[in-house]
Length: 178
Image (cartoon, rainbow, N blue to C red; front, side, top):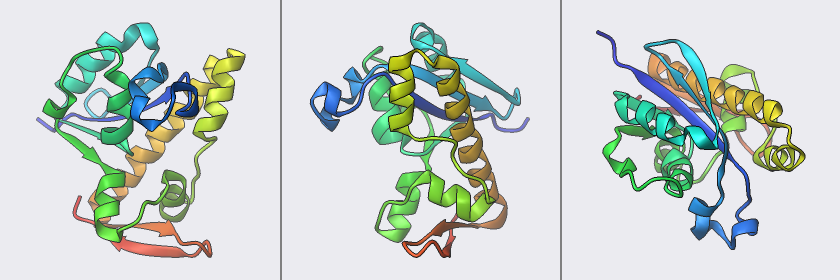
């Protein structure tokens, strides 16, 4: 039986500024979370009241993959549960690439260079949509981020490299061991 990899991303209700800084991520609140399961081959949206079901899906995965998931997404979820997220086998693309490059790159840079696709919005836009009650837009955006994360990860697993765009917008190849 093949491993169930769950790709995950979430958007928040509040910014770091709204909650007094990045050290207060658990106060940011979940607006929408989206997963994609390789076993079920389905995207699942989760709202704030669905956090227990979201945690169940994440904790039942053979591996959870995300972009900045260890330092952000899981930290936001700790505002809802005392579950120990360190028990979940997790692969964070940002942390892995940072360890190779010694600097942070954005998911959009990876997507544009590796997949010739881009993110549909950004976190600040998602915050504005939350304040405006545009939850469907947030869900679509978050789903797109999960799709991009999945496709970059799967590209890296298959090819053992990905690309990112440097400051001059030129693609740079990075060898990975995914």
